[in-house]
Image (tube, rainbow, N blue to C red; front, side):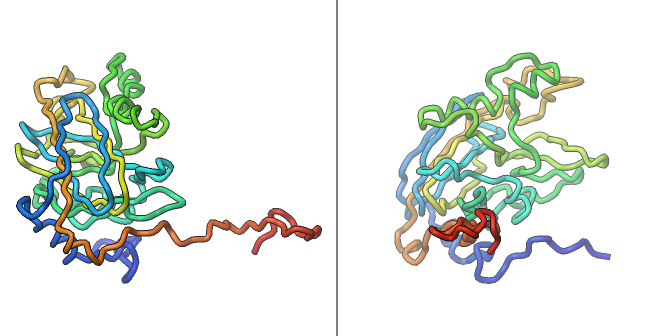
Length: 290
């Protein structure tokens, strides 16, 4: 007896239908053909924010050793449109890799980015059920840390992201559920969330194509590679397993994106079964259905 089919199958011709040849061409557009736009490094236990114009490629890479990074995305010019981890988990997978798309919140619901390359793609599922690039969990935060007996610590991923986006006029209320890049997680026999040591090595990378103009923010998790428990038995300061992460932004060969178009927001009219009365229509109810 096989497993049930995916609840959200790809619909031909829709945004869930991937032109793999196009994204493969972006992945194969090696450094010599790309135009470097920007490089930055996110130090340990900190956060950085940066912009990626639509049609550009962004690479997150390990530069010294294994390290988990918590990623947030917003539309650069409209931060109300931001990454929607739960819907991405349904439309794509609980652990994303090449060809998966990162979707935005309602009422926009469109691909914000598409993953073009992932050096950990071959990791698959390990013997304990762990997979990488996690959407099952979310960012660590100082509220849960204190609740679990860790005291006040201002360098959890939530706090790192808060500080990173302040220069862009955003606040703690704009920080949202993340994509845990390089993080290895799964569900145990009790259906409870677990985290494992990050399998990435120096030079591993996770790369995505910006489908719309993006503001990105990344936190280098204070747990580093997560090989040391953060709470409970065996917990201790994990600074010894913390490493920086690198970010590289490239403009692909213009010939590759000549026919590409940025996706538009969802076509739904946003009526929700409601209709405002027309002028002079005294009998119409403001909540009258269509």
